[in-house]
Length: 163
Image (cartoon, rainbow, N blue to C red; front, side):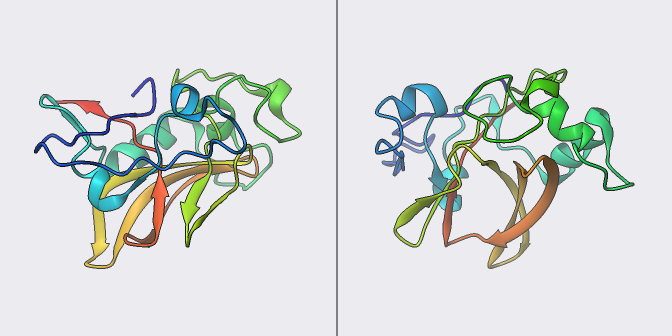
């Protein structure tokens, strides 16, 4: 899970839509990978790899340092975020990236526009809450958490896990 996916063809041979905020950064895909809708995220991992499950993200957060007392900065955020000045947060100097996830704030694409570039990183999981919602890992506002959202309204980054 060391870098964001940037594939244009799915593991089934279908074309994938790559949303990229090139207005903010012309080299967006090279630096941040693509933002994918959930349906495409489910097809982006090549053979021998898979999209993380909700439990994978929960385990990652637990290993990174949970934040039961809700203090800021969140220990998991500091362990998962990349040491990179593109993050627009006041705790950047304290980021350790001790997990080597190196999350970058690629933001989200939804409802026809880009949001939260430089502020948040969102990563799809393969776990659905129900037929309309899927779980994701969110880093931003100096916290890290697993949440769910409508799986047909947003495009997030994708990391893969070796089978």
